[in-house]
Length: 116
Image (spheres, rainbow, N blue to C red):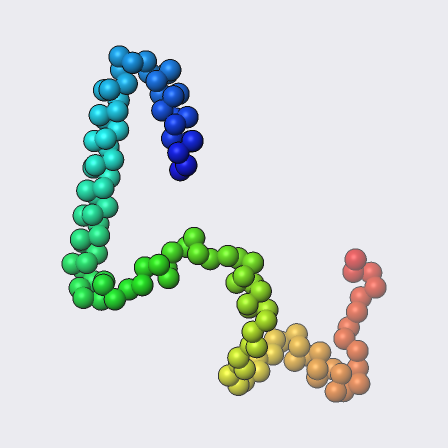
């Protein structure tokens, strides 16, 4: 948040709450921010305890979703050479097998003109 936005929120709070109730709500906001910070620190400590020494080795900035630009990801995916797919046995559907068999025999697949 920019300074201008914070200033606007403060001015609106003064007008909406009034000078009598503003100190009370400001102290409640401070308590809320402190409790949220304690909860975040507690979650971080718990993650450190559960993951052990691996927690410090993780590059958290690399996992930040704000760094991903969908346009860049698509551009890189389209530019990069695809890796060759491993050779897999070709699986044909029953329809494709029947169509290939009929073509080998020189026949056409059955077609019903009145079936529409």
